[in-house]
Length: 194
Image 1 (cartoon, rainbow, N blue to C red):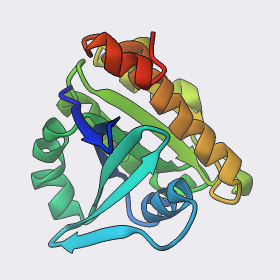
Image 2 (cartoon, rainbow, N blue to C red):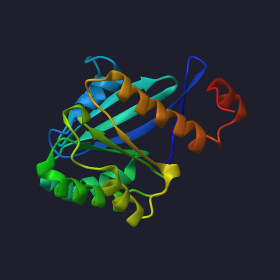
Image 3 (cartoon, rainbow, N blue to C red):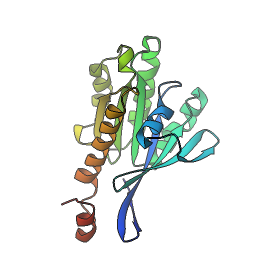
């Protein structure tokens, strides 16, 4: 993971790149909007993905919302996820018809993500009922040696901004705990990391 440090007006800001992936209609774009707190985002759209810049506390997330088309998943996802710091895989927990496809995609993502990267698996739409269990997800993660220190699995509902925000603060805390130890002490102090 290569985090970047920007200094703006004397204040350090950590810049991290995030790929958000998942099948069509699982809530990837909604996640970005909820994360930002509003629908007016700094946004660029390119072929196959959109790029958003969102800041929480002193961490700036450059998010890449990747297209869910099957061809794009096969060719682009495995290569693209290697170029980011964090991979968020969003699952529609209420979709009982695509569980096998969801787990197949999770397997491909898990294979592509390195142990230096943070993998976040979000089981979305839990307010509509949950048909995929965390045990099935953990089975895939354990098969490919994903350990707890670099993986977060969480149930969320886009109806609750609180659940979405809490996941992103888990990510912020993870970055502070595991990834920012090499920063100069004065920057760590300004970032409230000791």
